[in-house]
Amino acid sequence: MRKTKTAFTLIELLIVISIIGILVSISTVSYLTAQKKGRDGKRRQDLKAIQNAFEQYYAEHQTYPTGNNIDTAFSNNQRPQDPKNSDPYTYNWNYIDSDSYCICAKLESSPGNANMPTSTSCTWQTDGPYICIQNQQ
Image (tube, rainbow, N blue to C red; front, side, top):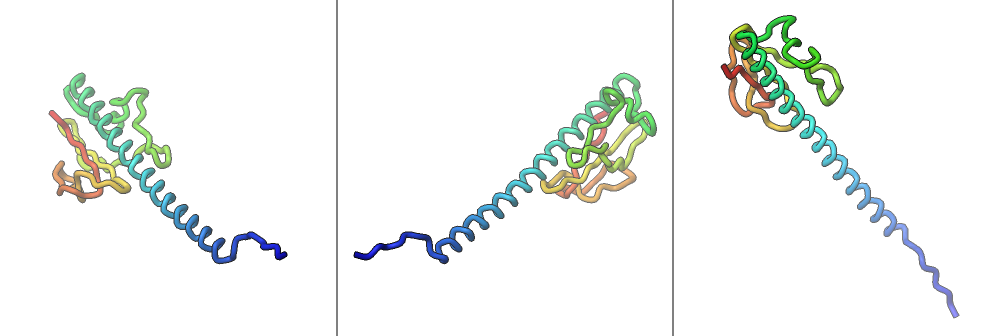
């Protein structure tokens, strides 16, 4: 009588390892994309919070905050933090004076409402990598 050995062949092991590698790479890319979209969502929320803070400041003072007064529009005199590196946002404060403002932030992955905003007014081309807000008064 012959005894047969049961084991995996080298080809079977290579195929399984290849499949696992492909699945890991696909899930890594999906995870990184989800992270970028999450941070973009946070940036959108933070810009809306900035807009609300500026409008509330305007309602109380009949002017928008400028220069060193910008932080006084926020609770605890602190602007929202960037979700990627926990530093204060480096917003593109394109245009801000006591009567109007235009603030933009660059998004990582999702499309925004602006493309190359100008530094002299609150006008921009649509569908670009920036999200921009402007005064509502």
